[in-house]
Amino acid sequence: MKRVLVIHYSQTGQLTEVLRSLCAPLLHAGHTVNHLVVEPATPFAFPWSRMRFFGAFPEAVNGDPVELKPFAEPPGDYDLVILGYTIWFLNPSIPINSFLKHPAAATILKDKPVLTVIGARNMWVHAQQKVRGLVTQLGGRVVGNILAEDRSPNMVSLVTIIRWMFYGRKDPFLVFPAAGIRAEDIAGMSRFGPVVAEHLTHGTIDQVNPALLALGSARIKPSLLVLEKRALVLFGKYRSYILAKVARDPASRERRVSVFSVVLPIGAFILSPITALATVLMSLVKGKELAQEIDELLRY
Ligand SMILES: Cc1cc2nc3c(=O)[nH]c(=O)nc-3n(C[C@H](O)[C@H](O)[C@H](O)COP(=O)(O)O)c2cc1C
Image 1 (cartoon, rainbow, N blue to C red):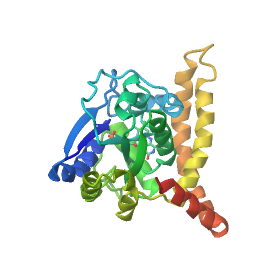
Image 2 (tube, rainbow, N blue to C red; image 1 turned 135 degrees about the horizontal axis):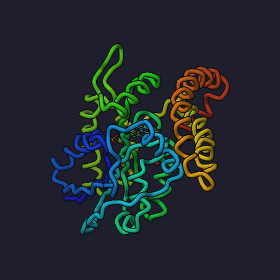
Image 3 (cartoon, helix red, strand yellow; image 1 turned 135 degrees about the vertical axis):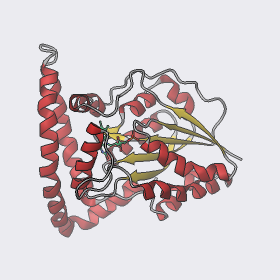
């Protein structure tokens, strides 16, 4: 029987549920599952205020770590590390990024196969490349990825996540569905467990990803990939704008975060339908290239 270490941070418990569902079959198959829960020394309170939410943007985008609560380095040798993370502003969440930059991370991840599990709204491609890079730097190797996302259309999930994050309300309202990953999708994560368990048993965990993909472990919508790339360019500029005058005028950050908190949601609502339309047109000309890029992004 093999040993699995699950590392994760979840603010509302959504990702914890995803991982619980995924790991139940591993326990059932007789594997040992231990947990390392990442916790920032100063917790990120939930629900968020508008200023705290958008105030986390510069550090999330730049990958600046925060101090973590001390954690016991898990004893023993693991056959698989499952790294569960969420996305904050197209990047790995600040707590998980802080873990990956923590001195203890190398000891835990060195020479280990790492299966990433993402619980996000719908934009995660850049974050996954970053996580893959950090894990590789630490001497680990990402062997696959499982995505749990909100499958509502982009504009719909934008509305429901804003309500959830700022008011703590996940329930359906008006014509909108419940916020976050649907309960049946969280329950459905358990379908990947037996595949992971089997590859662990046979010592073939490095080859697990094609079997996971065959079960629908991840997909990339072309329009969201294009939107994410555009947003990333803008995010660099927004970050520079927010921090531009901080050295001379520390209060300028707060003022600029306030401006950004209005500009970003409006920008997202304008850019999203335009990009979706542009991607349909682009697919007519560059459809093959886009499909090939997506195919490569899903392979490990
Ligand atoms: C500050 C912040 C920024 C976020 N940015 C993104 C994002 O860029 N892309 C995305 O798919 N989800 C984004 N989300 C949603 C999270 O990835 C996640 O689904 C949600 O916070 C619930 O996760 P939990 O398990 O930590 O509660 C963001 C959430 C927060 C709090």
